[in-house]
Length: 68
Image 1 (cartoon, rainbow, N blue to C red):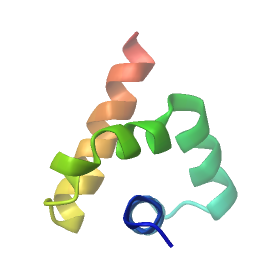
Image 2: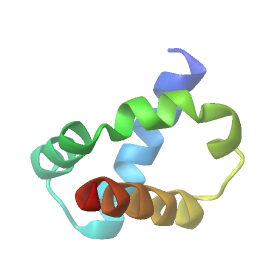
Image 3: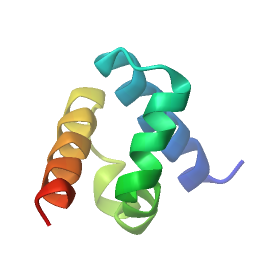
Image 4: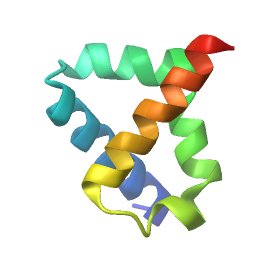
């Protein structure tokens, strides 16, 4: 498994667990707002953050996309 794929899986599970979402709901949200693409594009910066920071960053990313 590539580093970025493992990172995306970690972020997905962290977000899903923190927000108490089903896997389906979390994936629908990630697809709708392009979160997986964002995580891949910004991997170099994001992979240095801790779990709480990643969840917070994903929340901010989704909020920004909702407003656009």
